[in-house]
Image (cartoon, rainbow, N blue to C red; front, side, top):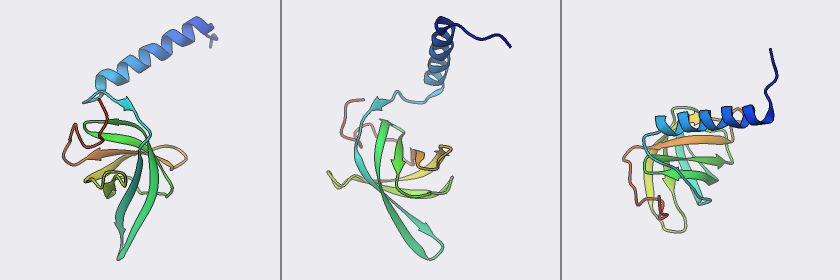
Amino acid sequence: MALLTPEQTISQLKMMEDRWASMRSHPRATASLRLRLEWEEGDARRSANGLTVDVSHSGCMAVIGADVPLRRQVRLVLPETGRSAQGEVVWRGHEAWEVGIALAEPDAGFWGVKL
């Protein structure tokens, strides 16, 4: 297997970024917003604090201080505004701290940032 030059590597990364961007349902905006995630686990109610990495009309990627299971139904709460929304964990990073959350009802104004 041949090694790529730095220019070829950058070109490959750009092509992958463009491909992922075209597959997304909404554009993303980089935003660090504090949030609280709440979910049920058996009879117990759990919650964890987190911080968004990026947001879109349909959800966010966030770093959460708990191991939230994939496909778990969650409630996102933005402490600064008091707004909340239902969602689902649709992706987890390999370290389990990063999660992708899809909002049950996409809302362009939920995050309070320009998208």
